[in-house]
Image (cartoon, rainbow, N blue to C red; front, top):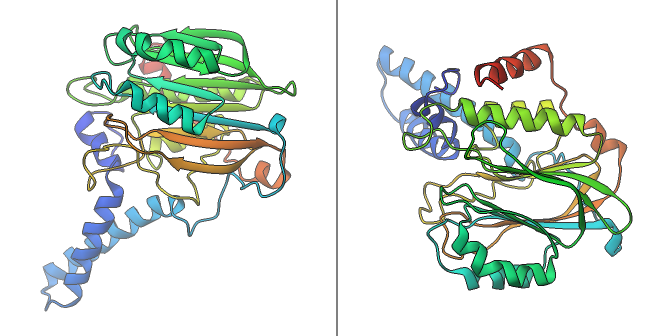
Amino acid sequence: MPFVKFKFWWVRFFDFPHAQFTAVGAVICFCYCFMEKTAMEWILFALSLAALLHCLRLIYPYTRFSRKKSLTFKGETTRQQQLSLLSANVYMHNSNYNALLELVQDKNPDIILLLECDDKWLNAVDTQLRNTHPFSIRHPLPNTYGILFYSKYSLKEAKVQFLVEDDVPSVHTIIVVENGLKVQFFGLHPKPPTPGENYKSLARDAELVTIGRQAKASGLPCIVAGDLNDVAWSHTTRLFTRISGLLDPRVGRGFFNTFNAHWPLLRWPLDHFFLDYNFKVRSIERLENFGSDHFPIYIDLVYEPDEDAYASREVPDLADRIETYEIIDKADL
């Protein structure tokens, strides 16, 4: 199913649980090893083994055995070089506002991105967050796609855009860090391919590749963050990293599964940070749950250009560019 390019939600669902497929496939192949097999069972064993190897190939980069793409910062740093970010899908119907505020107070991030925020969330957290993070972009909505963005640093060209769907906003801004460093930031939360949202994944895919092109064209160090409603190893997300030239800090560090916080056996990474190669990672961690169906995720970065990191970028080929144009064209952008 992952090789099928159909955009229907029931096809694209099979992009998500590859870690679970790997575990089940390993058990199946192990059991086959101790069976007396007919010719048909040998064929099924070979197919099961091929499926297991395919799943392993996709998830291996997100294990600690793989080589990191975003480099780890190990030296001394100053406040001017650092930028920390916290991203959280709050779950609009969750009313545990104080738990989130305590989490923010504990981590003290420079940048806060909150998703699924309505007016209740705005009224509950805005005053306290603006005391510590005076620069903000606020666009609450009652449809689970509202966004609140808070920064300790000043913002330039701050705006909310509706790239694909009229009721799904994204945040676009330039963050001016203390030492004059300007960072292009995109915060987004596209709709997932599900029966209750979009029957196909086309709108989500179009938003991702559009942001990827804008990140590449910005000419500034760039960070993309948010609940992408897609897993790190899916074809679309990997296409996004090639188009944008950004790096996934999960590679070589772990899954950091953020959804579903309530179902331990059905979790996958939906909430992401993608980074310019000039950023090195001091730490990345999944934080404790505060009542949402997503875990929040936090990352602490240092800006330090490095030629080795530049070489780790993936470059799009002609097929990637053609596919990008086709996705955008089908979404009528």
